[in-house]
Amino acid sequence: MELKELIISISSLMSVSGHEGYSEKELNDIIGGEFDESFRDHVGNRFFVKRCGRENAPKILIDTHLDEIGLMVTEIKDGGFITVAPVGGVDPKIMQASDVTIYGKEKIFGVVGSTPPHLRRPDEGKTLKPITELLIDTGYSKDKLSELIRIGTPVGFAPKYSELANGKIAGKSFDDKACAACAVSGISRVAREDLAGDVYLMLSSREEVGSPGGAAVGAHNVDPDYAMVIDVNLGKTPDTPKNETVEMGGGASFTICPVTDRKMTKMLIDEAKEKEIKTQICVTGGSTGTNTPAVNLAKEGIPTVDVGLPLKSMHTCSEVLELADAESVSALVALFISSKKIAEVFSR
Image (cartoon, rainbow, N blue to C red; front, side, top):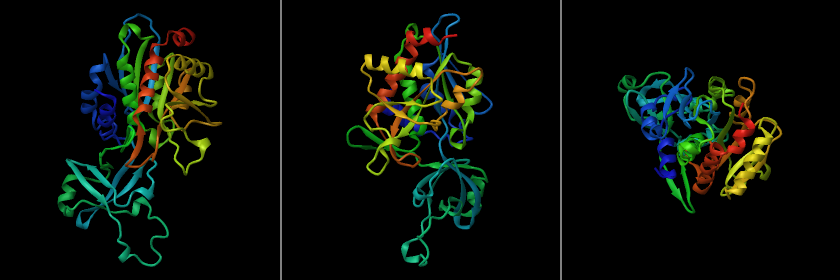
């Protein structure tokens, strides 16, 4: 499967935090054939393993979180309306008039209601309504809707995808399922005999609802020799601070910060240059906003490199990525899991 198709296929799946197993069969159908085995744990992490075929081989962990931001039904109202609570960092500014899917006994299309300007009071429009006060319109009667959904039913952005100019695509949930697609693509590039160790792809849970999320449990249980965490990174636009964003089209990003392993990061940067893989560097004096700290602090400590996929309009229904950057991330994953230099230094 081509990388663009793989990104859209995985990103289309519903995996609102706490419901990462909803599309388990579809996920297995899409990527399971690339791996020797798969399993899940009690906090919703999904693992896919590709073995190198050698005894006592190092364990290499690749983490990308599977969960996405979304909503949860809090009340079913007259006229087929529902109210919701946010799950993860949903911005109220992008909600009104958005298309959503309600995942009840069947999938239900809904639209987030918006009061027309003709009907607004003079003081309305100056402040945003909190998400908990918005209404989602389904068109059903209350009685029929109550048969199909219940309090706590997950709600996600409708899976719609578009192509922009110059190899860019837009849609929901590229954070972080586009990175999962890049990881699968990179792992599939490497023949078994060329692997530096046994590769564990962890599609981790609960990242969007707070650190450390499921990655802490998953990394503890796998206990890898070393790891790569891949997440989206804030793509540069004209209205964003230069030092807090990365270039779209600049390739995969490396984060240099206190919770990343400097030696392994430098080794991978050097190898990427040798292979002419396009990359860029960003710096943060604190945490990374990713699963890297959770993975790094598991067990006795796991050497971890933090890799990013540049993304614009993050945490919206129309996130934008550049396929050339995704290809860079895929190539970097392939390099990381086949690097004998890194395996020699970091294998226990």
